[in-house]
Length: 245
Image (cartoon, rainbow, N blue to C red; front, side, top):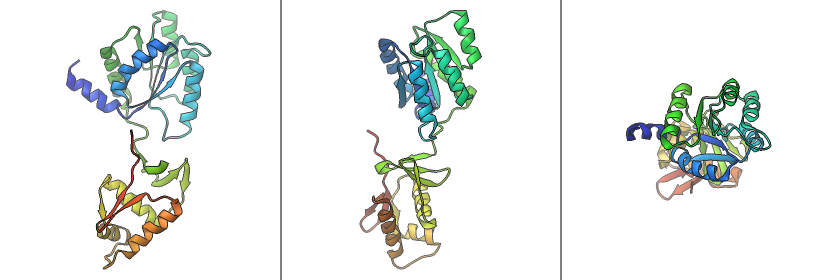
């Protein structure tokens, strides 16, 4: 596989949330090294029971839901097929890829009936994983389910579809002008906005002073008990985003 194709696959997968289930620690650690080339956000489970619990827990909230599942078949507590069948009761569409040492026809047919999107026999390599991911992306037209979720500082989350601010998964009631303030800054993708730009966008007119902008930001700070908008002295404000380490 040439580098351009590989880079295109990585570009499509990098922001997807992956759930990876494997009971063998050595296999899990080795496979993770390959998967981390493609995914920045990987959740891990050590058996089918833990995998199902992880899926159910994250499936409750769109901001943390999974885009893809990769799993082994033969695992303690709950095998891969049983786990997949249980997951399908909650979500019939999420792509599922199986990495397995089993070439047994019975296992293969059961996995097909459970509704999987790919099957790779161990031992596998980076090219096999790349090809399978490319097929899944093309088949499902995968985009991150949470691409509209904007992570801000201090655990605040802006849902760009709903245009609602959340903290600890609870919606925060904003005024019309407070909502417009967030919309302006989210559109600017982190850029500094001057007092005049903010004033004109929110109040639809021009003021000789920036007093009403300052008052708006100040009231919002009191409501949130946190200063989400950084004041750049003499210029305007910047929205504070979460810092990923």
